Image 1: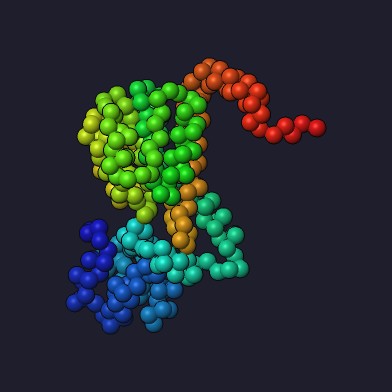
Image 2: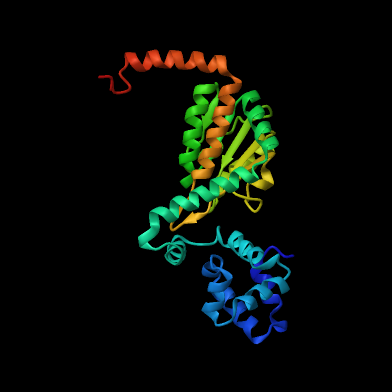
Length: 287
């Protein structure tokens, strides 16, 4: 099966019935919307039955309509512009149920991440981070929030944590110019993937560092350069990315690393509490 679902649909065009040709034409011209339609909705839109849509997907070699829709979604996630994403969101989420729709979608992504996470890869990632000489963390654009969060807490747990700043490409390379064997490079990126993050990870891999990626699936460009890949579900919600499951995965990594270095962690936070109190870092809310 070809990875590009649009090519699969276009290449089979001569064998289609009249109804199938209408389905194919609509998908090829409106793939951004079709990727998020049910079989019934797609059929109603083009004027064919739901069963015709299901048979169309099966005849293309997909595991039913859900298989074809998944292939469409994987293809479009990194293609859609912000404007297209807003248009798709209008079809999926109405003003009256935005709150419930978004929270429910985030809960679904968390559940799927729990079901699909590879615990062996997770444990290996924890070991690699603990044993590394230096830890470099890269997350650009919307993923910068995730990398900043991870860098903040890892810096409390161990020495030599370097958070890469989202600046010019050449400056990113300058920040990792000394990366070497024995170091680890952690890349965080979700659709639309940052080309800077991908290029920096390739540079780190070529320099001999271990590489860990936190991303959304096998089609992510980070996978190619990753020694250890941890997947967390992240789908679009209108013009923004849902990063709830990736943040939860980062939480789990930090907690696991903290538990593995319990004595050092307790000592660090005792010292921090003293510093925080002396410098009135937090508001005193005691009655």
